[in-house]
Length: 589
Image (cartoon, rainbow, N blue to C red; front, side):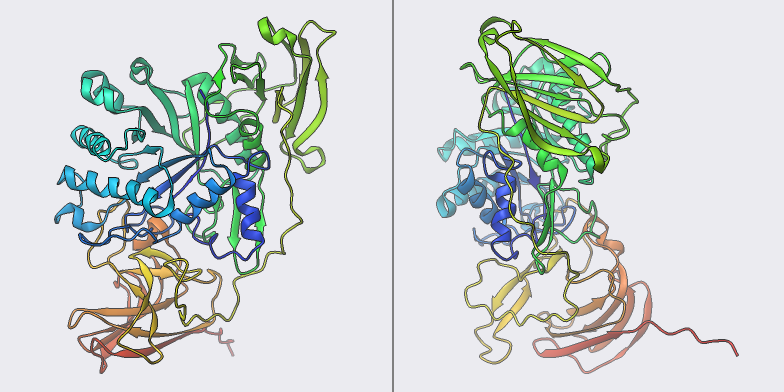
């Protein structure tokens, strides 16, 4: 069975504030059937307030008695995907969890019932508030699973009438989940799909022995150049040929985060400039289309799939109703390396490949042909429809002349289409003067545009006690450290603007909520974020409720440039201004 493909963790941050019509165009290229990438699956992070690679995503339950199903952008994204393709499969997976679930430990399995309850409320909330049916639920991204937790989660889902929600485990390696399932009959029964990350097109013996569906539940993660597209084309075929995986999910959906964050531009396409409206439909979108536009979940792979004699591979799928799709790729080693794992050398050279349609397929009169050639601009084609193949005079046999770095889709379906829109606006840097007073009465999104939280969660907050200029604010809302997935910083931070700015002035009104121990900072020239946020350097200007100030060269506060006393207390507004200038070099005289 098929198939594919896309997911995101704090990677669609900048997409939500794209102006129309560009935002809808980007969503069409991703989700609209027979238009662009025409994705079959959307896998989203269940926000847990912690750093998950390129930022933090808010939880629906920051605190034990708190429930809010309108935070973040995942609900919006799932609805936009469903609007375009009502049949899209939805998957939820937690990476981090709010701190209160750990009862003081950095571990989600302290109280199994409580964590299961937390995840089930997210699924119930998706339905109640957004009419979204979640199809699959994961355990804990790339971290330990707990067999008893998985069993409790299944019971709780059933108790809520959510028998249709399937469980995928463990979003890590094939082992040890596969072996555990073979040894534990109850665990075997409750896990529907074994999902592994970056399997390098191979699956483990134990995983195959279970007879369960095998998925590459996170893959790709490669710069969206033609080499990234080559990686994607190769693994979409070979994950099934070599490893029997019937679904391949790309991290990430769309590169809508500041490019200097980790894994910049590792999305199927790029939309990282909401201020200009500029976006790029990169080649991985059209490589996806070779598979997604001509197959659907529920189609079957034929037994005749495999490797071509002189390199490359082919798969064939059918809907069981007479339709046939054959996908051929000849990606060279040099132009199809994924970011991970290591790819052993192989050779691809020009060859003639002959295919013969037999049985009921021998009656097929005509196959549509779609073609991609990656590489040099002079010979480059992306998802181009060629003349169709007529098979009536040839006893169902045809021969293709294949060169390296090509993709062919041959199909009975006539619905394929290369969607297009007029070119979007030209690329522009982040505006050099920018201000936000957060003056929004009923914000559609919980976070102010262009702010990318890297530790902690910042949300619009209407300050009812202040009718004046601080009625509308942006507030950091976490009161304890989450159960982390990455190394979140010790201080909360949200970034905005342009990494390349050197001479700048930052001005911000700030309010410290915690007496004695509280503090706040503004900073410029911050040099990193995402999973590397703990070691961020820059110029940081801090004030503390105990009446002191500091200027440091890093977020952790180890490099101290200046410090002293200042009249500052909690629960009072102050304006901080930080001006950073590059010192001119003195000429020697």
